[in-house]
Length: 193
Image (tube, rainbow, N blue to C red; front, side, top):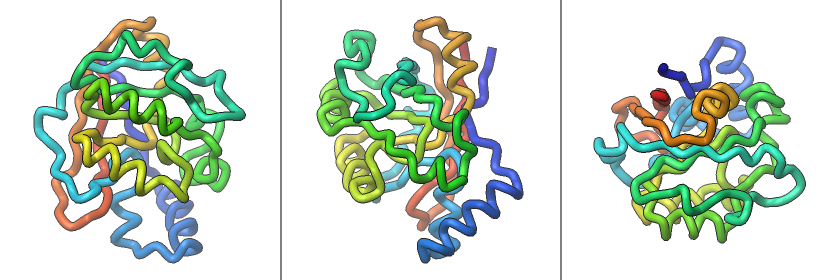
C-alpha cells in the first residue's frame, strides 16, 4: 500500500501562503520553493540515494506545551540513513497555510536534533512548519544540512501512516522538483507500507 505524505497545494492554500509571504515581505520566488511539502536547500544538493529510505514514524502527538525531546521516542528503533518522521497532529488540527498552522509552538529540542544527527539519519520529517521556531529555523536546518541531513516540512496523512504501519518500519520515496536557485524545493513524499 502507498500513502501520499505530500500536502495538496490548492488555490486556497496558494492564496493563504501568498498573503502570509506578502505580510512578511518574502519575495514570490522564495515562496514558491517553500510551498507545501518541501525541504530547505541550505546550500546543499539532495543526494539521489535519499529518494528511497527506510522510514520510522514516531507518534509525539501527546507533546503540546514543551519541546519534543529524545526521551519522547525510542531512539533504539533508529538506524543509520533512516528517514525519521514525527507525527504531532498539527496539520490535522490546523489547516496548512493558516496563521494557526504557521505560528505553531511545536519544535524539536536541540538535544533531540543532535541525537538524530549522531544516529546518522538521512532525513527528518515533520507535520509542522519547522524543527525549530522561526527565530532558530534557518540555523537548525543549516546545522542538519551541514551533517548531511535534510528536513522535510509539512508532511500530510501521518495519521493514516501511523495506523497502517503499527510501529513497523516502511519505505519512503522522496522526489524533490529539480529546480535550481531556490532556497526550498517542493517534493513528493510517498510511504510504501
